[in-house]
Amino acid sequence: VWIVDPLDGTTEFISGTGDFSVQIALTVQGQPVLGVVYQPTANLLYRAVRGGGAFSVENGRVQPLRVSAETDPASMCMAASRSHYSAFVRSARRALGIRDVRRVGSVGLKVGLLARGLCDLYLATTVAKEWDLCAPHALLLEAGGVLTNLCGEHPVYNQPKVAECRGLVASNGQIHDRLVEMLAPLVEEMGG
Image 1 (cartoon, one colour):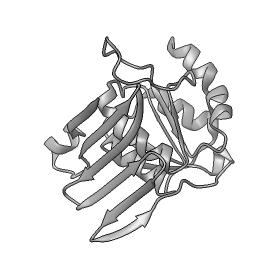
Image 2 (spheres, rainbow, N blue to C red):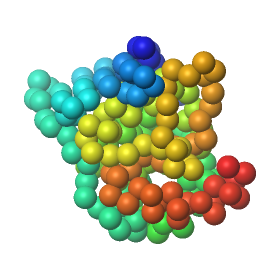
Image 3 (spheres, rainbow, N blue to C red):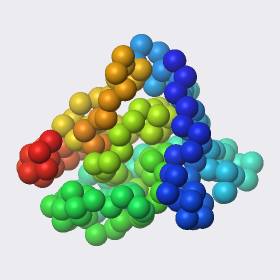
Image 4 (tube, rainbow, N blue to C red):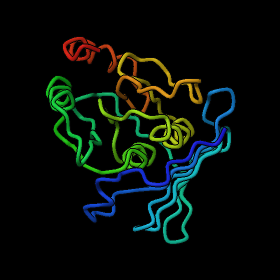
């Protein structure tokens, strides 16, 4: 099944920041096997195919992508939403001791920062639909990262009922389970 988000980062598109993207994904048996994220304002393309790696294409230059190797939460750079910076994300940042945060619009662009190794973690409570997640998920998997909901459950796409997932933890995968565990008390407080 093809899953397309023609405009991820609507708020940023409307405000003219340029932090929006077009996302196209292909799923097979509920799992992402192909993902494309394109930021037209920067002519930046991310692409990934299961088993074929993840790449960025910028100004005609193709670069293979790989997540960082950072394992210390306090040393991690967190990608965060420019327009949806929730109380949960603020609390999580404090709980993990994270000082470095990069605020970006589109989910695909935030996950692109992880795939490039420029950030190590992305948390969200408002990312909801599979068209927001599927293409970035394919990209992150091929770059070596992990994406789950806040409870550590992996998304399954193209379900009979398109439902909101319970938040998002995308990471370089080095200590993903530990991060989910560290965030569990905050998720519980949030009613997760």
